[in-house]
Image 1 (tube, helix red, strand yellow):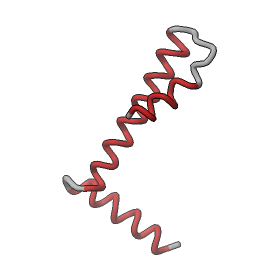
Image 2 (tube, helix red, strand yellow):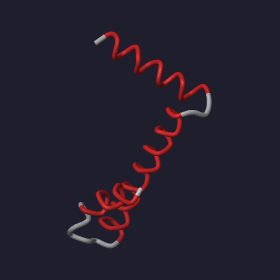
Image 3 (cartoon, helix red, strand yellow):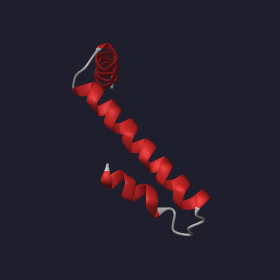
Image 4 (cartoon, helix red, strand yellow):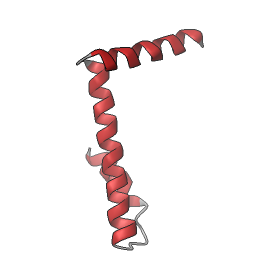
Length: 63
């Protein structure tokens, strides 16, 4: 468990330091999360769609 925690901390440090694979993964994850939240807001809150639960899933697949 300590080894996994150490690797996670190293990945966070690498993403923070500069461009690389870790930073690309973080950026892609943030884009997917933003797309899912936006899709949910548009479908559920603004349009009142009863199936707005599916909108974030579609956004994640598209990203």
